[in-house]
Image (tube, rainbow, N blue to C red):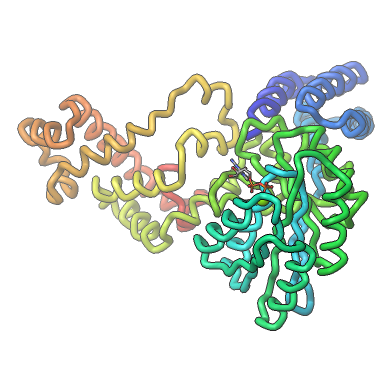
Length: 446
Ligand SMILES: Nc1nc2c(ncn2[C@@H]2O[C@H](COP(=O)(O)OP(=O)(O)O)[C@@H](O)[C@H]2O)c(=O)[nH]1
Ligand SMILES: [Mg+2]
């Protein structure tokens, strides 16, 4: 996500960090560089221009203040202004005071409406809400089935009447949702390849019929300025209440994300980060600014860890660590938890200070993790608990059993030994000053 723009900001910041003081010349120079990066990322030129202006004015204001690290202060200004540009604070989904809350999805064909309807239904279901999905895209025969399949997957009912007037479908669905007492109704509508009058008329008629609590504009986050243009067309026809940017896991340059809030005046509410049903994140301007600027995304990392790591298990491991009882069996458990969190290079990319360029050159070999697991699997429980008993002939047996070489077995044992030594030292510190201790984070990340 956002590798391109992050790399470019990284280069700019390297220069800015080294500034002995802030001067007119370096404000201008940095402004020019940021402008170039933003335009290359396909940010709307007015948005880019105003952004540079605001950053420059603020930087001007700090010229007189004696600061220990002028460069850092300059970077903070850029970060604050970018956060502001992205909307400052997360804006939660507006739930109606009287149910049902109605959510209308609008956007071009292929932008990700149907997928996002299901993701949103899943998200709301997780929060204990009952949801009804409505299939109002009657133009592509597969669209109704697509929603039905997704609905089945997450066990959420899908209202459909086949190919009849979509406005009628939506009106009927609203009635049914009301009488069933569902909390939220999500309307999946048809999109066209381009903005056209007929489509706008139809979605306007649907909006009139159901008076949605939220009208969300779904847009492909990879499309840059096109996203902004179609957002404007849709907001002329409809009273949009927010945006959902999809496909942010792709090779997006960030132009849509950076421009769209300022241009539409409406907040980004969610971003789509995978094709899967749980690939929806609540949008947070602060976090997004940090992602764009390459300051890492510790919050996402922690959330990810918390979602897959069993809290009790983590505490058990933590205790064993402190008591210096951590063995290869525990090590295996941790490896499995890390693997559940997803591709390792993606995780590394979320850590602040990890240079993406470096990551690109570095092949993070996922297979290493499975090999390590295979080696541990080939050990007897006794060996896992007491690695020191693993002598030459045992090593040979383990190597054969796991299909790895004796050298690899040796290496693993050596690394584990080193880790144990380190743990011993850490154990005496009793986790002091450790921000993650007891929070269910795999300890290999500490
Ligand atoms: N990688 C990725 N793919 C997505 C995301 N959202 C949607 N898609 C894919 O985009 C394509 C179009 O999505 P669909 O929901 O059918 O779009 P619609 O025509 O607007 O209803 C499908 O292949 C989806 O799997 C996302 O956040 N990430
Ligand atoms: Mg669709």
